[in-house]
Image 1 (cartoon, protein in one colour):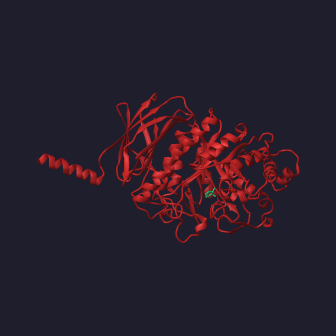
Image 2: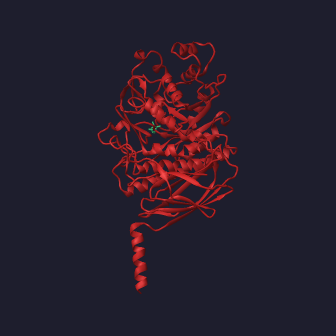
Image 3: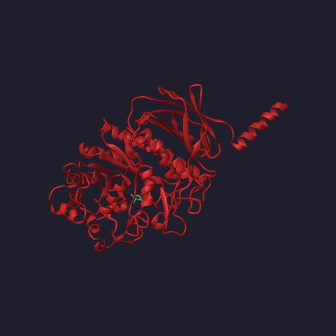
Length: 505
Ligand code: AHR
């Protein structure tokens, strides 16, 4: 009897403190498989709020502290100028002497004056400094095929023409050879309110005038579905010429509550924590179901699924212009980034490019600025930890995870992905979403020889923890000592709400 009481008391204690050993099993196989394109680690920056102006572009200069931070995480691609802004953007307004550029109105984002001081030349200089590929979203909604075609000539033609000479006159002799080219943005919404049938016809027309100049073959990306609008994907795949389409996009934002009241970025409890994570994990279903449709029309998987807008969207920070979409970034958001990147890695046969929205001072940013101060968000640190997966061969994973249960809902507590890089090193990224319970992950490594393991962890005391200008390093990676070899197995002790990236030795 006394034994039973003691056992019950122990179980009660364990349940209350959450210290019971949750177990997860993981199998990683080294087989021939697809490569995780580095472009999955891309980013998005729009003329919106303080992303470009008072962000990248401050005092008529590119901010080099931002550039250096982005170089460190090997940003491979930067999408620009929108977003919704792309379909109201006229490139000719933003070339030539800055003081003579046209003043326009950013009608989507706060009706602010757009002085066009940051245009084509500035953006391509920014990409050059970061060392990343440009990805321009062309204007279908309010532009013409002629305007799009002229922009491409200005950008990519090396010979003699009025537009190529204009580029030279504006200070750029050589063409930029821009290759990633979006034909519109969210054409089902802010990009023109089109039906998929109408957009497919428009795409065919615009794409026809997107010319491949010598040495500058284009990678055209059609404006794809709003998350689970599978009909959009189906109609596009059926109607657009796939042979000269590099990818079709898909946009999906994680919202904790609903579009009217999205929830605070900093003041939230476990209800918003859980629902945001559950909603972020929907990316698995969206990618899978869109891929099934694409497989029907493109079984060889030549056309990429390009998730060129994703991330958590919260209510704006109190006291800021609501049209500027400035939000803080917590440990929860880092878990969202890490879990989403694991999903993309595991679907790298189809997802060949993605862009987190939106780099600096907007939505799920990597970087926040305040005058000349700058901080790195928890999400930035995830991209730093995960950069090892860029262009590495995917190692398929099989995972049995305990559930993280909240109220009547449950999600898998653990998610993972793994890869082998060009130098032969194996990296494993693991996420434990459970906010209270640690998880022991026992891993079988099939066809992989290894002797030791090193790792780094990103976690913090609370899932609401953020980096502020007063405490910029509250959430930052640290060395991880919770992984060891036990027999032939890799055993990893994952603390609650943590991201761990391991390197096998
Ligand atoms: O990223 C903010 C906005 O979200 C983009 O402008 C638009 O494409 C999407 O609806």
